[in-house]
Image 1 (cartoon, rainbow, N blue to C red):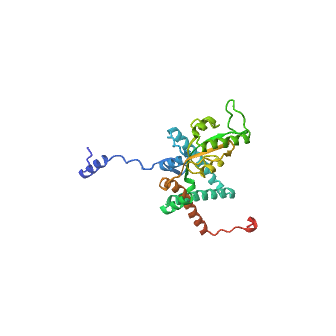
Image 2: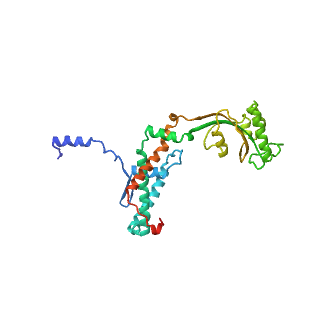
Image 3: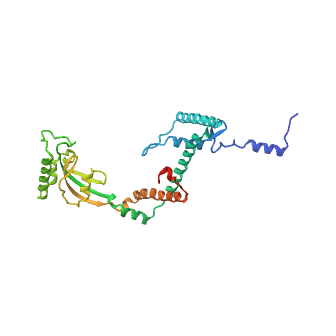
Length: 290
């Protein structure tokens, strides 16, 4: 005897039979260690933290084998941690202290990042910073003639006489006098400079900011005006005769983003100081001495 479904049940059966299979979970569990489950998004965050590239570099794409290896390492770590908890190693005083400190470090770091991310420096604050640090944005375009003396790291030219300190200074003064009297700086640099790199280009050093040159050279160059020719300046390389061609300061508009990156951490540190000041902190003077 043939079994027949009632008409309404048959229709319902057809409707359900035609439904597509349930879609995969949006965030499936991809790794299970004992009763701990790790979803795809959690694993990818772990991978992201474990494969942080160096500054200025991009994270290389991970191959399936590399992902599997990371998963195996994670599984091993979790399995050991589970066993440690079963043995109550997390309750051992030394271990408990280390766990507490690490947790505090992570939380404090996360708070700092949160505060730093919320910091917005307004125009007045950035301008105040710019005015207080204008020297940091100085730019000088200059050229020089170097006269080496005995002991300089600059190599002697072929057939060149080794000059004493006094002889090198006298030669540098003589060259400066010739320039002041109308001698062409570029020609004298090509003929006389012991800095063969810049000398071939008439002594040209191009444009530079603070922190690029040795301290004695920088101090002299940034104290000069455009067109000035310095008295001989002594460094470990020898005596320099410097001519400044241009001395200017970067405009505020050109350094706003740079200032923003410097001001925001300072603002975040102030916010952290405020948080710290809310806490009651007491130091034992007997132990710390003050």
